[in-house]
Amino acid sequence: MFWPPVIIPADKEWQLLSFYNLAEAHILAATRYRHNVPFPAVRNAIANLVSRYPQASVHPLLSQDFYTNGVGLFIKTIEETVDISREQLSLKMIMDMFLERVIRDDDDNPFKVFPIVPGVEQKVISMTFRVSSSRPVIDGTGVQVAVISGRHNAGEAPESIAEDFDIPVEKIRTAIEYAEWKKAKAA
Image 1 (cartoon, rainbow, N blue to C red):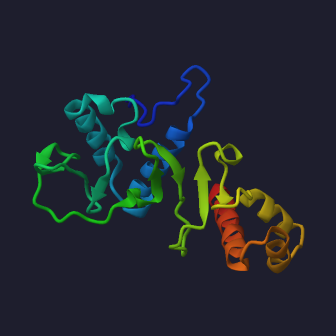
Image 2 (image 1 turned 60 degrees about the horizontal axis):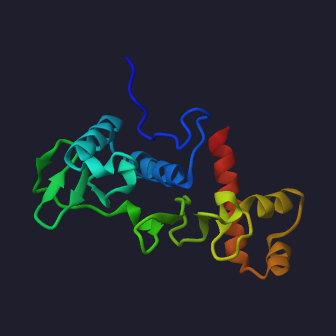
Image 3 (image 1 turned 45 degrees about the horizontal axis):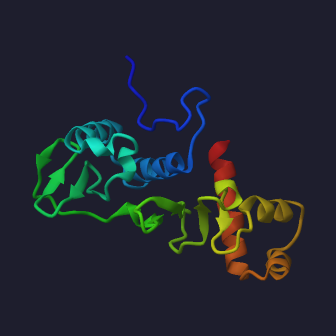
């Protein structure tokens, strides 16, 4: 059975992703892996959202602030709370918002994503539109996580790296942990 893609690549011919696609992928990952929302509920939510709000068809995962109870996706409107996964009104309690890690500009477009780092709640690592080609960096510095990781893998101590970049050693350690977690996840 064929299912249409949940995220539409910016360049369909070359299958290239835009920063908005990256932000959508972050939201999808948070929905699936942090909040355990079943994929059919996500797919239904997107279809219902696009049907109800046609202007959401280009980047549906960026068009609303979503809430979840771990079973479905919800949006809050001024008039009502809608269980968008099943396209019906819901009295279920609205759960935590995972979009808090997607930062939007004054025009409501996403420009920065703080990926979820296991065991780290603070926002240390970010991917920012037009900063280091949207690669993970230590937020506010532009220093790529890959550079920190590479120096650490070459045997350099976190304290030495922190001193060279004038970045707190805790942030350097978080960058190293993030890189190691991503590498283990990819293996």
